Length: 232
Image (cartoon, rainbow, N blue to C red):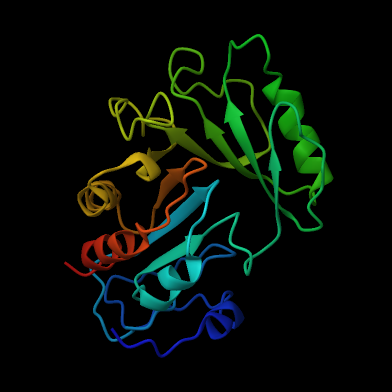
């Protein structure tokens, strides 16, 4: 793989919306804070995919960005070289990051300790005022419910019950939100990422989650799966 683009160069091109060499490209504009560039821009893309990576542990984003092709974009709240994001939850919902991006982890309708609707609006107001990202627990309400929640641009549904499970709650997981799998717990990273990517339509999103163990050592398999998925 040719490593023609350094991390600094990729950071500088973060706002680029063109999808080089992609026969499946459409006229829709790419979302803010994703990079559709890559070290192998000559590939003919069969589809483009956007990947939201939320990892609470060590993850080598430099390796991911250096080895990815130009057919899929990435946003990662904990990527130090990317946009500044605020991590909000039912306890910490108003601490601004200094930037305008935010996530809320997670919505759990019916939980006595959650006051998600008001906390999300507080998080939104403290971080620039634009709608952004919320994760939804599998057991929220009758299943991934975000009833009564406003101020969110994209809901990522957790297709797992806890941090040790990858995708035990697949049925209905994508019915009212974007499916997110716990790749941090996967022992078959390439196959799991490939399956999730193949399940998503052209131009759509998918979510990758990792708890405190992070994605360290799994980055190459993630990139390999996404590069293959978007070119075959």
